[in-house]
Length: 239
Image 1 (cartoon, rainbow, N blue to C red):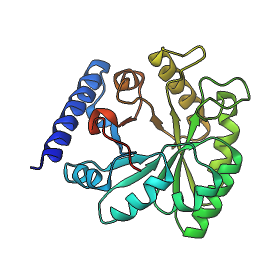
Image 2: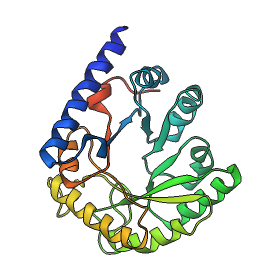
Image 3: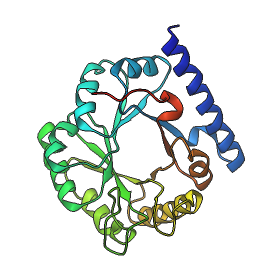
């Protein structure tokens, strides 16, 4: 093994052990939680190593990094998730490689995604990014729709050609009532997921938890955790 492959394999094993332990503590089966490795700022060579180690779900948050990386790894059996705030002028590029966009938070973005998905002949999965630091009708500091806007936005995604409503995503907020209370934030997301599934039963994906708080997300019931640093370490950024 190369040094980098050895490093990534060891880090993956540690993360796997953490997820398995969190599942056991929560009385959940390990297969109920899917690991998404966030490969932002890391090169395509790392993505290729991760694929060889069995990773099948990877995530990016900047199209300018993701598009060339996805193109370079097009031969690999990977599902690509876009998790960053997405501007409408980047939608055509993102739809070219992303199987799922986890940061859907406004109607204008839904309309752009639908238009480009139809044009490309693709079905793109969508998660509504929920801002738990938002007021009744505001967006959050890092994007996201306020809880009160989930129903309307979910209906819009579900009725849009080329799109599939898969569920909800959140990032533990840095401000507001849930700041520093990751478990409470993730519990709230699960309640919102229950509400959404009354109208859209298939939208059962809940993406929550990262390197520092994946245990809290698993305990709350998250179906997917997004882990970057704990797998890839701290390396110089691209560019």
